[in-house]
Image 1 (cartoon, rainbow over the protein chains, first blue to last red):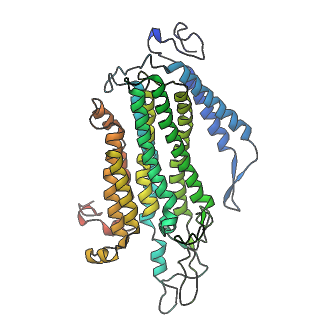
Image 2 (image 1 turned 180 degrees about the horizontal axis):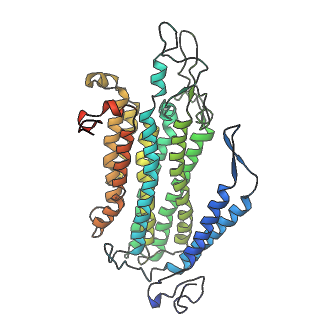
Image 3 (image 1 turned 90 degrees about the horizontal axis):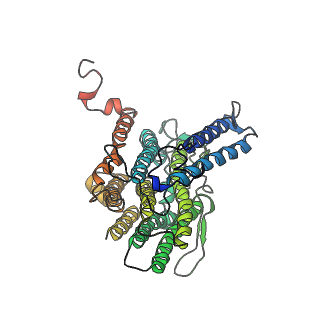
Length: 357
Length: 107
């Protein structure tokens, strides 16, 4: 229970801000139970099949998984209602060193981003370790076809080579292949700009409320559209591909998705179209499980953060449309903006090192 | 201004990947991939600072000092990780400078 009943007229919130900031809440315990249940159930959902060397779904636990997600969400919702002042009447400040007099929510956001940085650092270091530790597949291919006399260290057809095949070998092979990733980069930068504009208009005191409502909604809505565009192009790049007909000034292009090209986490017989020996027509096959995994896990984790941002943006755009943002509570957009800029920041590193290099 | 700068730097990044850098690579005694990596790394650094410093207000605000320290706290762990990536590289034992190879200090 949230302690003093004078502060919380209802155990589900909202908090009575006339008594100052809340000091305790039972909501984190509810969230912990939900997360604990989720991990416990999830761990038991798969069995390892030794014969097939892969995990198999056991067929039960899905219902409990949803129950765990609901409990976690409920805890989050209660905490949110209890501890946040939605109309900006109260913005709690930190009292202890070293963050004294800085808004608690801002400090909390930076601490959260710090932990996020660790998550992405571990993904990047994994990528660096494998990329530096394994030979590039095109270097292996350049060694030439195996010959017991003239080239005993060369590759052999139908004998997969474990090497590092960066996704950029496919993605950066033509402007059309690169287009979804490049458009996404510009989309994220523009969305960082639009969120700054939304904050700017929400903070303005010299414009009338209706104009503020329209502008903030427009800029938050634009950010939402760009985020959706990002994930859509990601799906196109991974799973769908696209087709450009012959338009006269543009030649016909059938751009396959990464999955259609065989760039998947389970592929141990990958063949890039350029890994063909011209003289004999022999194909070099590569085990790309490690390289594809590092690519999909890192870019997928980033994509999951964009998806999380879309959920937040959906709520914020709706709130802005209802006229919910004023100069007194505009900082909420700033705090979300910190998260969104961080997502952009990560992409600034993901794009060159996973898509271009 | 910051926004236009970011757009321009991204355009240069994409252009650098498409550009034919073979002759430059030969002149500098590097591989084309190596030059591309240098260009991308050099461009990523100002982009990183432009987003963190200006968009995220880690530069110029009264509380930006302590918040920058908070944001940079993981840098310590990042350095450790990169160090161990280097030390666990297959060529580390032969590629390290003599002063930090096993046995250099009687160890």
